[in-house]
Length: 457
Image (cartoon, rainbow, N blue to C red; front, side, top):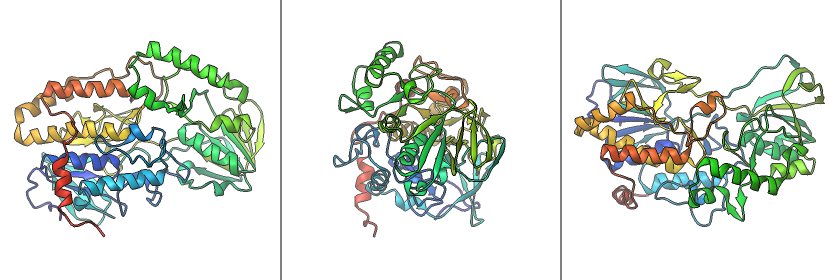
């Protein structure tokens, strides 16, 4: 049972969300004995990887774009039986097994949306959808960034069907239709491949060219090569990888893709090994940006037109924390300005976990940053001097975390970090603070306490 607004919060922490980031935070707090409550609006853990979770952007053909060996929680590897790039059901099962292994379900209230969070003196007043309020010494927002679909508007009127990719679930939805996918991020590329295999005709509208990176190089998952090979500076890695891709793929303009207006690595990587296959076989065709709509026809900026039954916008998401007023975060270009993409600069007991873009797997990075979050919150009650030292870092430290890469000028990439640079700086901050590093066996006490409890039905 949670603490009511009339009770003392006794240093209790509120975690909103029980996806991978929320579970990582919960385990880190549990290790240090920090009392917390966790709220999840859905009926189980898993976040976006649960296709039954209302509003999830996930679809049946979705797989990780990072590989099995690089994608798990810090000390909880994915099963060897998983393929190199696990599918969404496997990832969901893995995430739930993590929650069970460390006994994290007991502190979670499921089917319990958070309606509003307001400042209450030095604490936070959390109002649930049932109208009850509870006071906490700190709040960790871990609800993710893919819940507010962004849909552009084009001039004209369209008589067919218009949807955002967040509503898409299965390739069967394309049967008998001429489909236009607008946008070519990783989800857009996946969905375009589904359309190529199932639709009567499939097109992808793009505004810029992309560097397409295959999921395997020399038979090894690409991110494994990056993670375990020599760590090369961008000025060395980029030309080597660019030359290799040119040898393997040739000039992608022959498939209709525009020449990229940026160098390799300066944008979020497009990892896909199927898209070029479908382009090579004519199963899907590239079109430029949409100019206007007219009945069942779509006109593009180059003057060409296509008859379309369904427009699916794979155009991303607006970041939001809908249960908190924007005044509590310094929002810039649609992104909250957080130290290390996590710590609120104005309210030191307000944390945003998962509000980050980077070129790597998220789960392990969640563990590394959760480790710092937990030790900082613990210091707020037990080592005030060290907590105040970190307060000064939050206020004054603005590290360059691009790893020497000049990311393209967009709102998304202005908050982008290079994973190698980010993880290195977390180590530097941890050492500066004298906090404990993540080590194998660090959470054995949490696992042992979970094993002493009856297994869930």
